[in-house]
Amino acid sequence: MKPRWTWCLPLIASLTLAACGTTEGGGTRKAGPSGPAGDAKTLTAYHWKLQQAFTPAGGEDQTWFLTPGSGKAPLELDFVEQRVVVKNLCNVMSSGYSIEGQRINMQRAMSTLRACNDNQLMQLEQKVSRILPQAKQWAVQLGVGQEAPRLTLQFIDGTKWQLDGTPTSDTKYGSAPERIFLEVAPQRVACSHGVIKDYQCLKVREIRYGDNGVKTFTGQWENFYSEIEGYKHEPGVGNVLRINRYKLQNVPADASSYAYVLDMVVESAIEKGKK
Image (cartoon, rainbow, N blue to C red):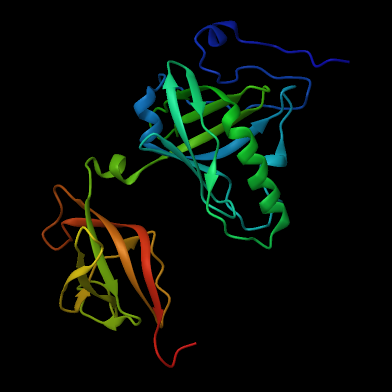
């Protein structure tokens, strides 16, 4: 017996792709956000994490997720400089994309070539690589209040993904960052942090590079009283970090004027005598 579909016709007409019905195929779509539709700029303003996937017949499809309890985060998409970057696979995958109204076109995916011992993760990576060029339509529904925005992607074969958005750092802080490099010493050091007793600061120094990648400046070591979003320090390991630094507005007198967000780890070195 073929699945019987119940459709919300005005929603189809507007090509929002957000589900407003159920199917006998077993897939029940989660209630979507209640805000207006987003435009193409909305794609670049959020990190998009996969929440639900549906087969061409409309049934919920768990094959796009790893086994519960694996500790692996769901697929995440970032739309950056006309490329969509897929995270939380074995390799980082990316594809060029273009938008024409509610249509989306993705090119053949490229990725790093790291081998992975997790067969399930590698199979998922291959599956994602095959479907990306089949992307057909997109729609974003913005949230109201605490609701997360939702991106719906539909592929040529009828597969659908629903992804919830969290703001990128540029969106969160309301401006473009300044790019800096910080070298972080292998060990934290005791420092005075006012209200936090026995605080351990990172010890850092600024590094600058020329256009040719050659180091042109190395600053003095100093205590770093802030934290770096996305960076988890491992004692005994020194790192050179590429940082996005955001200027903050209306900060208290005793607080940092900047937010520091990790962009990438450039170099790592294990402290001598530490293994």
